[in-house]
Image 1 (tube, rainbow, N blue to C red):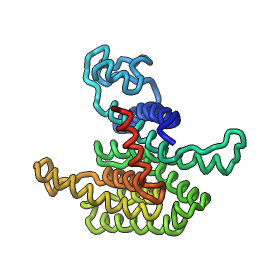
Image 2 (image 1 turned 30 degrees about the vertical axis):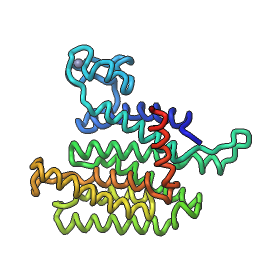
Image 3 (image 1 turned 135 degrees about the vertical axis):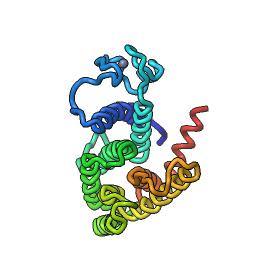
Image 4 (image 1 turned 60 degrees about the vertical axis):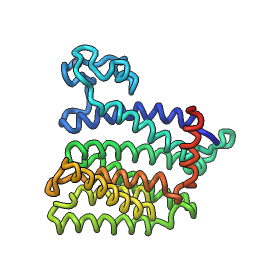
Length: 283
Ligand SMILES: [Zn+2]
C-alpha cells in the first residue's frame, strides 16, 4: 500500500492542529487566557478567517501582519508544518485496516488507537518541546497529557498482545520507572544543575508511551543528541559550561526517533520505503 488518502488527510489535519498548538504555546508562555479571538501581537487587530489559514496565510502575507506590517514569528509556519509531517508519518506507520462491510469493535480499536495515541502524544511533545526551548520549563499540562498517553499505550499494548509489540506491561513500566529514577538521582545529586525534576517526570511519561525496549534507545538518543548539540554550542561559544541548556527537547527528540525507528512497532524498512516513495514521486 502506498501513500494514500489517509496520509494526505492527516497532513492537512496536522497543519490545523499545529495552528492550534501555536496559540496554546504563545498564550501559555505569556500566561494569557486560552480562549478568545486571535489577534496580531504587534497591533492587536483581531485576525480574520483568511489570516488564520495554517501555512497559507503566512506565505501569502510574506510573514507580515496585513494591517501593521509587523513581522510574524517563524514559530507559526514551523510548528504547523512539523505537526502536519508528524501526523502524516503516524498515519503511514499505523495504516487503518477496517472492513467497512463487517465492522468489528476489536479490529476498530486495534486499528485506530495507535494512530490516535501517536497524534495526541506527538502534539503534546511538540508543545512541550517549543515551550521548554523558550522558557526552560516543561509545562505540567504537557506532562499530564503525555503521562495519560503513556498509561493508555501500555494498556493498549497489553490488550493487543501482539508478540512483536512489547514484552509486556511489567517491562514497559519497570524500564520507565528505572529510567526516571536515574534522571531523578541526577537531579538530586547535582542539585538541579545537570537535570531538572521536570526532565525526570517527562521521561517517565515518554518511556511509558513508547514502551520497552524503545525507551532504552530513547535514553541513549537523548544523551547523544544532547552531547552533540552541547558540544557544538560550546565550540562556537554560543554557551558556556555554566549556562544550562534545557534537556527536555532532547528527551522528546530521542523518544520520537526511537518511536519512529523502533522495529518493535513496525517493520523498519517501511519508514525508509516511505521516504523513497516521496522522493520518487517528487521528481
Ligand atoms: Zn499587526
